Image 1: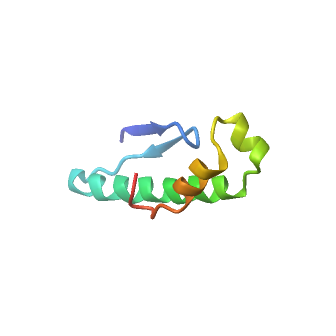
Image 2: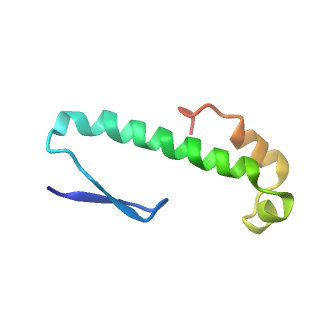
Image 3: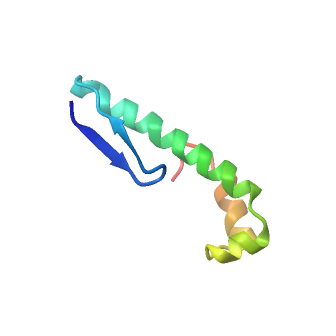
Length: 70
C-alpha cells in the first residue's frame, strides 16, 4: 500500500487500495484540514497574526469562509 505525505500535520496518511474512493476521501480530508486551520486561526491574537504576515481583517475573511471554499 502506498502512502502520501501531507505538510500540515507532517504525518503520512495511507492511501486506499480502491482508486475510485481516493478522490472523495481526499476531498473530505482537505475540508477537515481547512476547518482545523480556520479554527486555529480564530484563536490567534494580533501579535501571532502579525508574525505570520496577516492582519486581523484578512484572518477574519479566511475564518468566515465555509469549509468547502478555498
